[in-house]
Image (cartoon, rainbow, N blue to C red; front, side, top):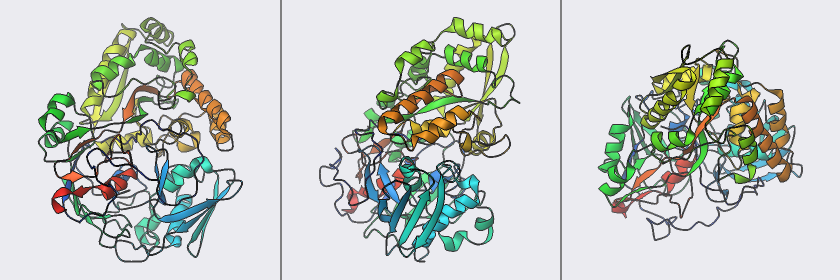
Length: 561
């Protein structure tokens, strides 16, 4: 499972998001020549093949990055869905509309009437206010640093209205608080363990407003069944979703190839021969937007990786094109050291700065000199361990290339494959030399991913869980750039992002290797309504939140019609 989100080239990257009304009109996908939004009959089952490197923990806490991918979209819903693939089209969800103040320092959401929680209790504006205020009370669940970094000052409910007030213009954060936060029920989360420990509570039997309920969950499979209290009449069409646990890509890929599973979200080596040619109804479309990167531990207690020369040497030695070609089978493009994904965000990318910094191509001689300046050589190598997730065969292949490329400059790299939960715990708490990872955040500009990587308020001391910025990059100059972004005009925002990219070149806080894609394979034998390149109504992978809900609400069984 990839906990990165991805999107295709955005037609309009402006940050101005208008008040919600009806969703923008969308054309039909190639697999559904009729109206993809037409009413359907209920029935059918969809099976997801998405390797996660471990069996299921049956925890569904939407505030826990380790398992919110299995809960947000399936069970929990946001206020507004923002379709970054389709020119930022918006779909009102738990909020039927919203209105910004003139200075963009406050926003009023009108909360949808007639919504019930899956246990039959009524949903209200109080639930929304409670969710955000719980995040204030427990900063560990404020995954997007809304209270500490975005300047959120208060969230209040009155009737069917929720007002959010900020210390400064907050429009760039709309994507985070409107689209990315799953709303939880006050009547469940205000008492007992969820009230006292919302960051660690397992939430084994989640109660949400979304289209599905968990029934049941075991270590080997999550079964979702249609929520009969769901507020969208007649939906979901698909009545059951099976989500088997896979320990590595092989069995999951085999289930996809033979049609046992219909929805894939992972790397398939030799995809044309292994999958596409097996069945005319097998398809793939994997749009890119974020990065897969090496995260070096920058805490001073890690003497080697906190040393700039060592990080510069790694960034100089790696041949990113080879990593993309061999490790990812050419299905992901090479990244660059600024972290700006191209051509998606081309206007933010400063190619001349990359060239001037010497990162436009691998330079083994330079890397060797840098390692020597840090006290290491091929005869006196630096021993480092990089943690990754077991079963991610493409990441293993990429790391094999990286290991080979680092050996000549004096780095002896050990690759440590860990179960997903173990990896997450060590990553979040800073227990690593190097980590191979992709941030689960994106948005209408590179600012969103770079903020996850570089903003100090997202981080935490070693031994404490960080919301992001797992490498522990602490730079007041970087923080100033992110703080200025919210009130800047578009031209200035482009300049600020380029300055963020310049700090990536100067300080090398992380080392991007490939541009991550939203892995997606789908079978149309019985299931219709899939997102396609022609109709990108949502990010297509099963690990994209909250986009997974939009996909599930479009899917239907042809046999049931």
